[in-house]
Length: 266
Image (cartoon, rainbow, N blue to C red; front, top):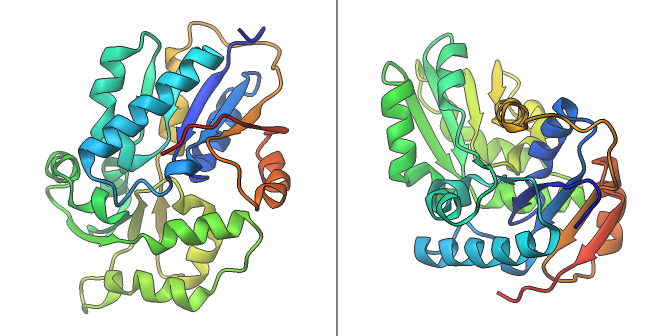
């Protein structure tokens, strides 16, 4: 077991780095393990039962190995289907990520909100319930995109992002006169990694809302006491890949100074 029991942040890819950044800002002296299930990336197209089984298997292996004090499932897709099973199985606090519909409803001036997420997330009953509970007075335009997930991964590997491609993805939010989204919910943890480019593509959007700060506040509230000295924070991948060297520099910018491979075949 680590001298400094870590907080485990888990995603199918690199999207959860946006959550890691927010949590590290709130809890700077904690030790982190960022686990990327790249062997099974992407999660979005998987059937729900297959996705739940995969998340369960990966987290069972990781928790047994690193014994974290807390787990953050930094993936909207996984959170909306797998959290009940995980919380029933593991004793430590487990935090999930859901689309930030509630704060977006409060921020929107014209009450037209865009929900930008994976195709699975925008159509799930969980999302319907969030909108019904927190934004019944709003017009919510939903756009599901797998391409943005791929683009966020590419950006972290040093590839340039085409702004015109982003404009095309965002275009459904602005197609109808009098129905223009002034606030967009980034309902996938990958998407905040593209925030600078998204702002260039849609400068008319007043608010881009993600769940990072809310997750950080929740994490801080669940820890009995914060650490005063951090250990070494590391990234974990479930498969080796050719781009690992290019990823290392980007991961270091997020405080992850070492990469470990723990093979967990899909």
